[in-house]
Length: 520
Image (cartoon, rainbow, N blue to C red; front, top):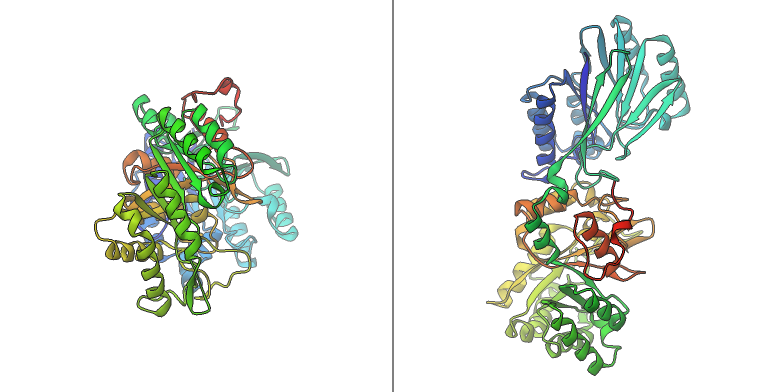
């Protein structure tokens, strides 16, 4: 009986060894194992339409053991200079002729159907015999009114049995003119919502109806790990106390959370003797990594500002015998942060002077990446430290100035994900492939319409999926380091409890974790 598998929304970045590439390779092998008749590549196969990524996608498809059809998505149009070529190369082959059935693609890469494309589709359908499956990237019900009406007319005039689309990163089933429309969540380990990324396998039953099975990528799901691996991950999973230092520290102590981060600005407002006693109590429960998040240094009026507050952050870390200190990249524009410029050298001197006691105490120093803000220009007037190479340039500078110190990247996943437009090319999977071995700590939080630092009650969406993080962690692409849940609005231990429950572990203080509604 006819069968096909849908591969959609891979968002393969222009680098090797990404989680996206691992997921796609697995999916292609899965298609061969399932012995499907054809692979349906439903667009957004690349992260930004860069030709190196296009070439790699085509190589993977053409060397697979199964024939394929392909249609481009909007991601293929993100590099204007080469978008026409990227679109055309991922628009063929556009038709598959099976025994008594066929599959036809419709190019909706820019959210509409051109007149030329309508003519091509109508001609091809006129030459087809038997039942037809239509494949497109853009969901049919989100097309402009005239295009949606055209598609409904096409469905009425031809023996269309099924429409399949991607783009939305979640699974859904609806109907257009009585014909089933299936959305697939796709294969991107950074974006697939509500469940791990998957390949959707369709097979036609004897009744003529199409049956669907979603086969999830095991590489992006920590539930597939061994018990020892899950326990080891839990030993790195900690919390940030954010603005409520003492209450959240007490809760972390009661829950035996192994890693805790204090934000210096909030912690310095506490009674310092009580804070010291609270830290000792936390360590007595098995707490092994205490981090202090320092205030930032900024460039203003031709000099570095904020060094007094930064120095108090350092003093706090030394008094509490912290294990590590997290610092932001310099708060200055990309235009200002040119190596050997006055701002660059000014920051280098200030960081070196202020961090010398930290390095002498043997603390790990983590440099945190930042992100674009609303209304920020996209040229060199934007902030510094939004991309991996910018962050690593500053890490290397500090390593040179503080020989013998352990300095690395403190990777904030939410900042990297909520960093448009750069996040289109520098996906989380791209970050992990580029700098995963340089990481000395992580900030983890969800991102939604309310911004960063949102609770993380399930690992797949709304904006950020953690499948690529889990894959990078399990394969060793990401360095083992403390993971701090940096959540506003509720204690970090709540999100930690959800995470532990998802991977099949129970938090020490969790009296009702079995009821947490997070399983996809």
